[in-house]
Image (cartoon, rainbow, N blue to C red; front, side, top):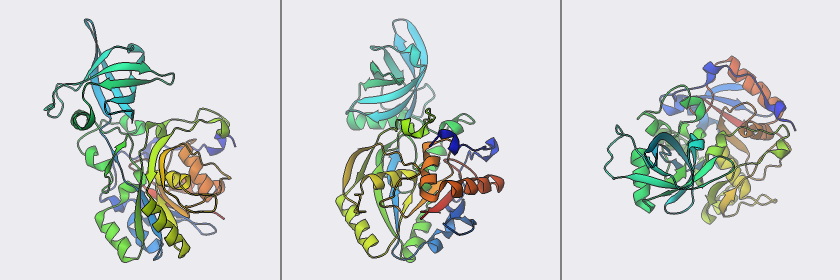
Length: 358
């Protein structure tokens, strides 16, 4: 299939710059095969599921991955900004840096601003150890392990998606808004945004309705925002992300499916990880490692019966994924309806509940 098949016009005023308050007050568009679209609220979710169904959520935690600093070279000083991408060791990270052309292997970078939060931890300095063909650099920090984690948390800012960051700056409110209430495993540079809609009260109501919740971990990388640059989808190189499904979780999911329960993934990250962990016969197994699965129309879903997800960018891998699950025509119709009726798009926007076609 061609990239142009997944394009649509999105007015800029549909991009949400702040989340709904409370979180579960966001709108929810229900898309089910052979049924009319339904305009609901995330708070309606318990009534849309059955006892025995299972929600699978991604418990990754977003780190404060955007760092401002100064490149130091002899008497030269240049302001730079880094977005951490992937941890390589106790003290090494890959990062996207701007302006990348101003950096050379061996340069020193001092992170932290004069007006930052507390600066109690001393210097957060790094050396440029390498530069990749894709524009990423390898940073070797002087600190390591928990000390480095604490310094990054103190000095860094939440890495808001580019379509939000281009229109406003990050602030203290984003430190809580851009994190799920159940986040616990540090490692993401982008939030699993469908999970932002959940509250403790909503979890309690789901449990009362007999709906189970299971947690998996997929550390979301900045590649989730990268555009598809190839016209043929088959030529697009999908970014890899690290994830884990433990054996006990896999077994409970298999038991639930055997008893007739439906598996509903909360977010495309949970879905991609779960599909990577599931055999051809539909058995979920333990998984630990990287996945670069690219789900396109024609894919046979092994585990997911449904997906709760936000509204995605035109011509993105995520819009291609939802078309694969619910059907291309159904999603074109759903997105046209969402745009016409004022749904809010992207990370801080509204949600959809999609049931698998066929």
